[in-house]
Image 1 (cartoon, rainbow, N blue to C red):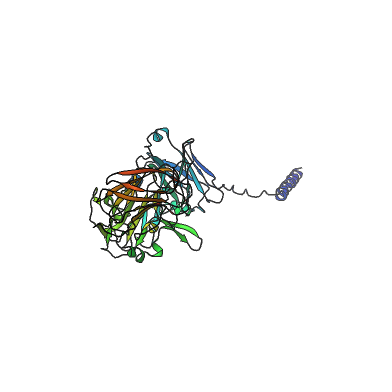
Image 2 (cartoon, rainbow, N blue to C red):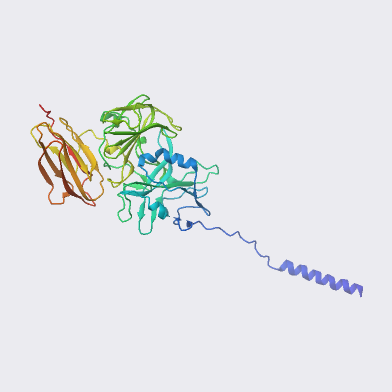
Length: 477
């Protein structure tokens, strides 16, 4: 009986083992793959959209911070853009350890009601991004204005975030991050009338064939020096990876390869707004010109002017050098800023097409129509100074890329020895007087002015919108 018990027990054991052995073993569960992030939200205030193929990240971080170091860096360049109000926090977007794959990431920021109420007249909301620009001689980490549009109905400020705005050079974990700040600057950027943009890759504005603001002189003095000392490697615009054809960094100025101690000069009349030493830019001089454009001279060895000083075109400002935290050789880094109230594009523009030898053609020509070149004029657009002619000189002043619409054009006679300034105003390339026609001529007394309404079309036939020219070269006798 006992043997039978063990016999049955053995049979049960064998059958159990056989069943287990024959039973189909389930495969190990495969890990659940995380999906690539498509959107990121911060409440209903900030939304970031990641189109398919834009990133590889399965997790991103979107947050607002109040970082003094970021704000201090922003304040170094805030004056350049005439920033009046700033949202009291910074926006950071971290997309982990892989760089963006293209320039399609977009952001929408709903502005607080209290901040909207602070907007000054004729100002607009703008986005500023901390980005690295570099050329042969420098690496500059600073804040720059990027193209954006504001929708007053939804209170949303929107922009595209290009690859160049993301860097892993600031993070100890080597993750890619973009840092944004919202501020107000002159000129509206309403979504109903988006700004005219230059040919670009993302936010990387490329070099242009025409000037997008007023004509200026060469900061090195004579016009030929601005062509002799400018290398193709140091121009305005994006730098590309030749293998992958992607944007690496953006250069928002031009670099003139000149030795330490080379004199630099004012490119137009204006006022010295900043003389200081910046972490990235080194010793700088920042000039606000009479037409509200501005110029920056960086990496200087000497600064020979003071804050608040009035300066004239061609006046000595300082001397070149190699100052700044990440500069590898002596040169002049030169930036040119347009303001958005008058021009269709604001912030840094390509200065090279604007550097003039003195004689240019434009859409509006103002000249002395008398026998002698003894009268001088100033011209204003909507009461904003654009330029002036000089007695006895073949002098041209042009402004380009103006915002379309109906504007007031004012001509003022500043010098007329016989108290009679003779003038001729000719409109070209699609501009017209609102009363009809393209020609005005006559006389005005010294110190007097005359104003007309002109129509600037949405699309111009030429590149320059305003020109003052005195064609005679005969001096007053």
